Length: 247
Ligand SMILES: Nc1ncnc2c1ncn2[C@@H]1O[C@H](COP(=O)(O)OP(=O)(O)OP(=O)(O)O)[C@@H](O)[C@H]1O
Ligand SMILES: [Mg+2]
Image 1: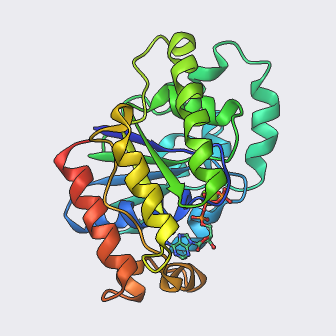
Image 2: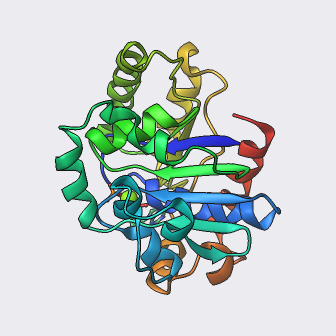
C-alpha cells in the first residue's frame, strides 16, 4: 500500500484537483484506491458527485468503523469524505493523547494499492495526522511567484517535522500546476525548479491550465468522464504514469 499526502501550505494550488484526477486515473488502471478528504470544505465528495451520511468525523471520533464511513465513488475508487464537522474534531483532538497518531490508528488494517490524502491549506492537527500517516508527499505548486517562493517554506517545514514524527519525511514529488505555456514566466519557474540540485528528479510532468478541469467538478465528474480528450486529462495521465513508476 502506497500512502501519499497531497499537501501545500498555500491555498488554491490544485491539491483537490490533483487528488481527484490522479486518484481516478490510478483506479482506471485497475489499482484499488482510497481518497481521504481531511478538509472542512468537503470538496472531494462534491467533485466526485457522491452523497454520504458518515464521514471522517465519525471515524476519528470512533463512532463508526472504517467500512461504514467510506463511500464507493467509482469502480476501484473509495472516498472517505469530509465536511465542516471535521473542524469540531480538530478542536477536540488538541486535548487527545497521541493526537498526531489518531488517523493512523483508525486506518490500521485497511487494504488499498494507493491511499491519497487531500490535505487542508496551512498546518493544523489534521494535516499533522496526514503527514504522520503518509509515506510519500506530493506537493502541487501553482506557477506564480508567491507559490514558487512558498515551496521552500514547505520544504523547510517538512524537514522540521521529521524530528517530531521520527520518520524520514520528505517531498517526493513536486507537481507544477496552472502552467500556461503561452506565458514565458511559468515555464521559467518549471526550469528554475529543475535546475535546483535539491529538487533533482522530484519534478513531475506539469499540469497546464485547463478550464475543463474546473468545469468537470461543477458536474461532479472527473476530467476522464467530462473531457477525455482535454489537456487536463492528458496531463493527469502523465502524472499517473509517473506515480505508477514509483515516486
Ligand atoms: N490546471 C488547472 N487549470 C484550470 N483550473 C484549475 C486547474 N487546477 C485547479 N483548477 C481550479 O482552481 C481552483 C483551485 O483548485 P483546487 O481546489 O484543486 O486547489 P486546492 O489547493 O485544493 O485549494 P484549497 O486550498 O481551497 O483546498 C478550483 O476552482 C479548480 O477547479
Ligand atoms: Mg482543496
